[in-house]
Amino acid sequence: MMRDIVFSPEKIGNAGNELKEISRAAGRSDFRIVKKFIDARHRNDIKIVYRIDDEPLNEDTEALALPYKGRKFDKTKRPVIVGFGPAGMFAGLILASYGLEPVIIEKGRNVSRRTEDVEGYKNGLPLDPSSNIQFGEGGAGTFSDGKLYTGVSSGLKAYIGNIMTAFGAPADILYDSHPHVGTDNLINVVRGIREKIESLGGTVCFEEEMTGFTTGDDGSVSSVITSKREIETDKVILAPGNSSRDLFSYLSSRKGFAIESKPFSIGVRIEHKRKDIDIAMYGFDTALYRNICAANYKLSVDTSNRKLYTFCMCPGGEVVPSASIPGTIVTNGMSYRARDNENSNSALLVPFDPKEISDDPLAGMRYQTELETKAYELGGSNGLAPYCIFDDLKNGRSGSSYSRIKPTYRPGVCAADLRDLLPSVFTDTIREGIDIMGRKIKGFNCPDAVLTFVETRSSSPVRIVRDKETYESVSVKGLYPSGEGAGYAGGIMSSAIDGIKCAHSVAQSMIL
Image 1 (cartoon, rainbow, N blue to C red):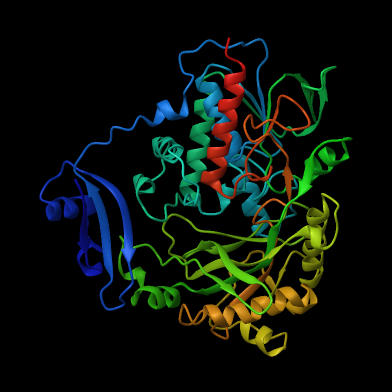
Image 2 (cartoon, one colour):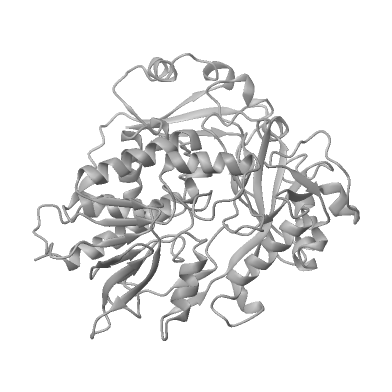
């Protein structure tokens, strides 16, 4: 039987043992938590709700993820996976679980080395184009909180969650309404999944970049060419990140290869005091309660120009440097598991279709680079990110320094005018939209809200066209575009799901 167990923040917020309190309220201990959420519809009556089920879970998540388990496969050639983000990682786990011993190549470094490189860049060291917040073990999501909520409906979500908890993710990701692993935990999770793949016969090769592929007489893929060697194979899962510009350029240069531009979004990161957002959303400071996470929000408004929406909201987090090319500035956001930093931030994004400027499949990618390079110059060409406060943007000024809300971007920031970077259709939308959002969350449009720019990597600017049934490229048989970079997902969970689906298709094609 499904039922809700409801607590006030005061009752459960600082309980030493949440599970014990829920058991006491439920009158039994043999139950499972299905969902945890905060009911904040009535500010004077905030409720922490645990939806529990007294019946055991009978769902076999592994059977759904491994439908061909027990079948015999043609193992003449090992499948190759390009990219070790969520799509490539879970595709690799599935193929390795079938005994197909995938070879996985990743241009970046393993997560331990990568973490050192990211911290070095934050502290002012030169950017490593192959090891940064975009590239390396775990993909870009490793350094953006490990948010797992998605609008995609799939039974594979439970399997992915179970795998992550098996390798160190907190158990509440299986039922929290806004599940997040936390960057500090995700580092260990991705390392654990890689070690599992290797224990099953898979090979993960870091600091090795795909530079091309060959095809046979029938047009099917016959090998993958990397920066180090040529790998003979007839099955390739192409799971690049959305920043894989060299790869996109290569694919576009191949005669007749189907790659197209895709709408994405452009904007800035906005920062507020975490406490201010907490009080606006819940009426209290979540720092007072160990069992209540900092407030999360998701907003979308229509302005007189275009839509403005928030994305990748990081409660109690920080704005991070996410460039992958020297001489550019890119912003993103992340949080650690505790989400207890002084500021909360989110992307403020305006939809953009590259076809507005060109029919070139790479028009969006080139526009991203143009804006990111210009942001670097606005910041002083020394690695600082340009920023402004909302009051300056609203009143057509520039140069005011921050005071109450301190930017969290490292290596640091430099005051600039957003209008010198983005066209008026973007700046006017952001300016008007923030005020409208202030009607939904009190203080969202406070004068000293900090805007750090530029945010351009929320999704891929291209789509590698594939067959809807087989997931194969419509241009090259045996090539399976997958995940966010290929244009078929928008986050960790949806990318992992897409990677599993592509692995299913590959495995099915190899059944004897």
